[in-house]
Image (cartoon, rainbow, N blue to C red; front, side, top):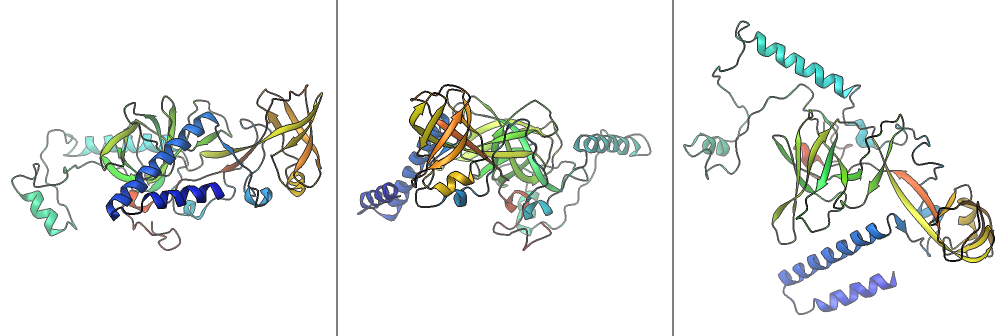
Length: 373
């Protein structure tokens, strides 16, 4: 805390004598440098966090739990759901719904025109509730030129493609985009013919299908890795190309990631993992006294049921607290090395950010205030 406060004071002193525009640019540059540093640190030490000294760990990490195995341990998909999930649509079988919608569309097309089909038939479109300004510009001779600020796209929607749900996309970061991309940062998504802002949550991608499959939350969209982006948006039918555009600090919009659409599923488990680390103070065979993981004996007793592991592959458990400064006795399944690092993994489920502009809603609206969203 003192270090962060000192850095902020130094930053404020460095911006003295600047114009408001220069100060804003300097703050953007400092923010970008901080994100780049955090992204590099996350790649080198994934999910590692520091235990707070001025706050009890059992209070700071009260929403987290320990798992015997991240892959096989059970996790209830309907446990502690946020209020946003009462406003989104859940498909009983997304694949079967898409198949039935396609078959219904083909049948309607064959039956149109007295069973002759509708291919090659001219039709007239009537657009209702269009503002006069947009209508006049669209009706001008240069409607597809510089007069219209956006292209006019008309596409068929299936009955459920207006339902707001949790959309998942398999993404890869663009090789030429160098700025860090953080989870929940606003981006502009192009999903098929649709274009809307969203706030995606990134997680690991797995082709393995298990009844209780869990996916690890990713704080940043790292290069050279396949990642899944999840966000609230109207449902879409795959296959469908997806592109994510992000505005840089210079004000330029660039392609940040590209990929394809996955089936919509609000029950996809996105699990955030944090790793608390400690160092061995004394070692005797398979037993060790560990410090710097906790700073109070009550925290040691609270997290005693959670399994320990080391960076060299050992597994162990907490035996008892030692003293009043958070030291603890631990036992492992093999001989312990003095230069090893003891880790404790904790998990909690995370959800995408509620973002009404993705479906044309009011930006600051909440699910409680606007149930119709």
